[in-house]
Image (tube, rainbow, N blue to C red; front, top):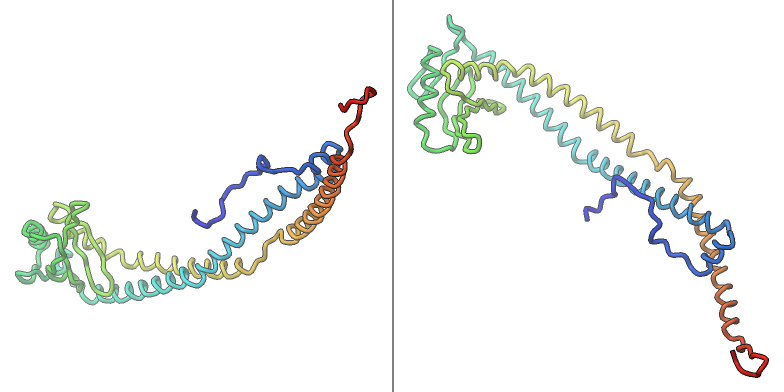
Length: 263
């Protein structure tokens, strides 16, 4: 139904139909019948392996043409975004004695951490729609407040080159700390993107090398398929000869008993 090869295979000859001539040859100990049945199984198995090989190759070709280039481009853009955000963060971080950088809110600039935390919780309580609303700036990043109706949580998205979402809690100082933790994690997250980019490039090169490899059992499949065709031709010839012999027997006159009556 999915047009994909099965990942497992089973050898089953329940539905193998032998001709009358083949059954006679098998009963007579004809070694060609046993060889044919073994080759039927081997050729079917090899064809399945080749189909899996081709399916994997087509999948790799698709990844080489689409998936890997798109992923590499996305990671490169994200790394550039982190670089811009890190630069923006450094230029707009001006901590006071408590280590808090001023936050620009709808009512003006807030310079105390407690007041900023109170203002954020107040904005959460005053929301009438889950849709994002701008609420100011913090350390050079625009802030959007939204409500996630699925998780039932308030969130702030920090926006510059990239978007960084922070889930809020009910603690005044805890929310400010969550914002700071997200901003301070830029270097680590960019390093993870750089590592992922290198891994993706290696995967692309490995895929290009793998897609060039032929089916390793191609010669075995060709040899056994040729021998199977040869055996099939031999057995079909035997079948025709037996059909002629059986037909001639059917035309013989019925034997008569010693009394002159037909048996």
